[in-house]
Length: 298
Image (cartoon, rainbow, N blue to C red; front, top):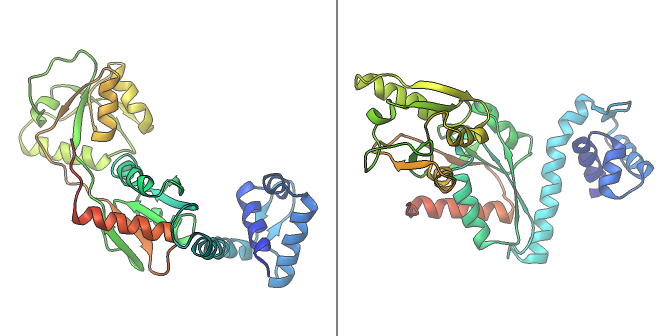
């Protein structure tokens, strides 16, 4: 079994067909098809069902995760030899749940890129809850940024503290000077992100009830997190966002304010227990460094 056998197999799975994989690999379709047949003979079992649409056999589904890990190990060996762990090149695959996508993911990745500009960071969305760990199990990502409470079995977790939240109001909103409290927020209709910071909305609702304040009036409940700022800018209502998302909204005309409440939020950088690529080790080390010396916000 050669590296190319696994590389062509993974490329075929990700492209969805042998012909598409051949185009991406700049090879002929027969070359890719022959390599997969050789792999099937080596393993003594079919891996794909050929037809108008390629599908995996149970053996193929079992192979895809180990194949990706093996290719990543090859890349790690090459990087270690060619770059002597200088991280002058390479790629880091990171999965991130929606609640951590803007903050702290942007801050962490930006700091990493400042140190290692030659490394490409590929970010994919991970499912909420325990399903997010499938990205690690299937080797689709080497690291996972998740708000799931640590520890998680067979994984190591490094805490990555999110930064502060800010209240964001439509352009022209008149507000008292200074930070905004829950009482002021409850006077405005709000835009909620159904998949973004739902824990924040739940906490705010609980605190409002405990304080005897009226519940939030939800004007728009958007499943598309990228649309929340646009709804606010269009005047649909106010919202609460991580600082890295709130400040650009302010540049676009939104009225932004600090908040005088602290929402308990947690994120953790997870990885499976075992060897990591040089790039993954560097990001974990950076997260550990930031955990010991949290960056200033503002």
